[in-house]
Image (tube, rainbow, N blue to C red; front, side):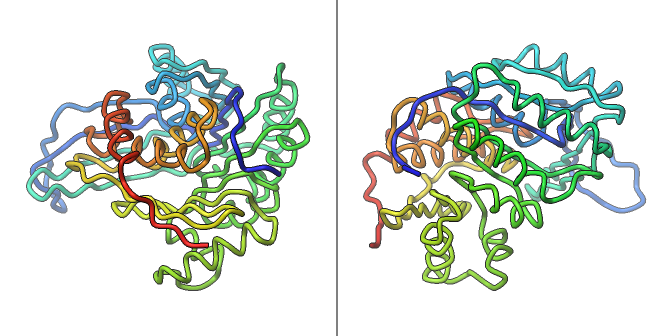
Length: 322
């Protein structure tokens, strides 16, 4: 498959959506009553955040997600106020709520992530069937985030094969067994961090050479076309059949790291839709991820910040190796 420029439509699937609640407290201590600041709630879950970020960057995406219960209804209503198209797929279980607490005295964040409602086999099959029935078929299918209880780690591989059968490029951003088994999907792009790349390799990848060796192996063996390794504040490692590039992240003030990875994926996919090369699209994604850490709580990237940081990155040299 060609890893070059391609425009088209974007659909995201979030198997484990959430309401993301965030607040702050001066200090987190055991046993005491902790007097928190005002609670803020936003839609959450990997694919939903990717679609929201695409909307905030001026693009268009359809967010598909299973949801149920009072929290599912709240999530649907909250998304009505977002620049994103959505389709809720009804399930019996109640949608989860995650909590992030910022400790103002230390600038640390405490993130409490719930497992989510258990989905049945019939519900999973219905979700895959709905993806098959999309008309027109999307050009990009983004599967991002964790899998809830009841969904086996092979689910993303099933989804990816269906996406490929419909001519879509499959973008996978998950972790653990779901990532390892999802590699059997013939994904176009994956975005592991260093820990997740190590999970794929089964060994430590802290060394730059080892990172490139593992990512190159995935591309050379035809497992995936594009590997974007998230390096946090250091930026990203991009590996394609054409070689390796290290894209440095711009230095920005950090307010919250929540949503940075989803903003990065959004920027990459939207960049491709807008006709950027893979290298330029990943730079745009790195800019969007950096813009996200400048925002409080679970807020995503802002378009103005992203465009400004992207312009800065366009002037930076890119370290590459053959």
